[in-house]
Image (tube, rainbow, N blue to C red; front, side, top):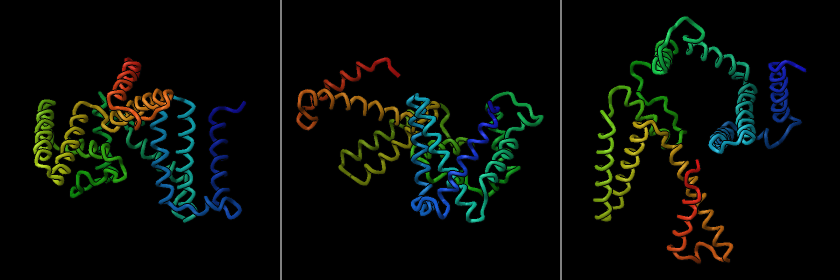
Length: 270
C-alpha cells in the first residue's frame, strides 16, 4: 500500500490531468467555452452547498461538495495557466508562503497567549509585511463585494468596531434596535413606502450589529431559521396532501395548527 501522502499526490495529479483534458482541443466543448465569470458563479454556488453540507451533518455530502468546490478552483487555475498568468503550483506555493508568514507563532519564535493575539499578529503582518493596507486605505476596502449581504454587513461593522466605532454594551445595541423599530412603525403608520424601505434597512442593519455584538453569525442564524420554516411548511403540505388538499385550499387556522404541530414535533431537536 502506498503512503497516504503519495496517494494524495497521485489523486491530485489525476484530477489535474482530468481538468487539462476537459479544456484541451479534444476535450469537452462546453468546458472549453467557459469563461472566468462563469466559474465565479459556480464557485459561489458550490461554496454555499459546502456550507449546507456542513450544517446538514452529512460527511458523504460534505465530501462530494468539497470535491465540486475543488474542481472549480482547479478549473480557474487551469484557465489562468492557459493564459500564461499563473499555475496551480504557483497558487499553492504562494498560499504556503503566506500561511507560514502569518503563523510566526507556529513556524517562528513568536509567542502568543490567546486567539486575540493571533488575530492581532495576522492583521499586523497583512499591513506591515504584505502591505495589504496603506495609510490612506479605506477601512472596508478589502471586504468582498460578492459576500452575502448579511455577512458583508457583519464584516463591515466588525471592521468599524476595531477603530472604536461601536456600542459599549449589548444594552446600547438593543436600545438602537428599539429606536429603529419605532422609526419603521412611524413610517408604516404614514404609509410612506420610501421611508419604510429606508427604515427596514436600518432595522436589519442594527439587528446584524446585535448578532455581531453577541457573537452570533447573522447569515447562519437566518439560514437556520429558513431551514426550520421550510421543514415546518413541508409538514403542512404533507398532511394536507394526505387529505387531498393544498395550502391554498386550507384556512389560516388549519395551517397554523399544523405549523405548531410540526414545531412541537421538532422541539429539542437541533
